[in-house]
Amino acid sequence: MGLKIYWTDFAKNQLKNIYEYHKDKVSSRIAFKITQQIFEKVENLCDFPNIGTLDEHLINRPQVFRFIICTNYKIIYWLNKDKNRIEIFDIFDVRQSPKKIERSIIK
Image 1 (tube, one colour):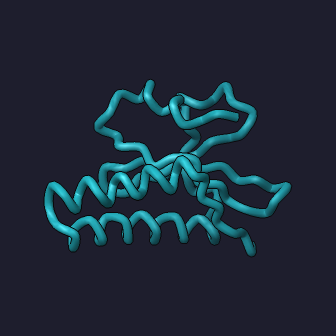
Image 2 (tube, one colour):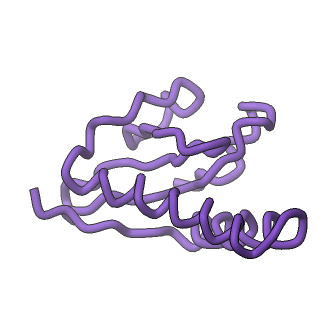
């Protein structure tokens, strides 16, 4: 399909926070492994952009947000057809209250 992946600054920051958390609490090897798994899941979206489930917490937004799960993280994205890319908006820890998802979606 030729889609590109675009990471918002917020999503990049979340990924960095995930890495730092696991590096501090467990080890840098585990932190790298978790972030690598997230990157691999995201890369799969290039070939299968609609594989994610619609996010019911973001249903009232103009974009159609979907998510995929990787370990304890929900990768929230939408397909921006105008720019021919998948926009990663958030990497959300599913152990939090789902209402906190709205903190990242500005548009």
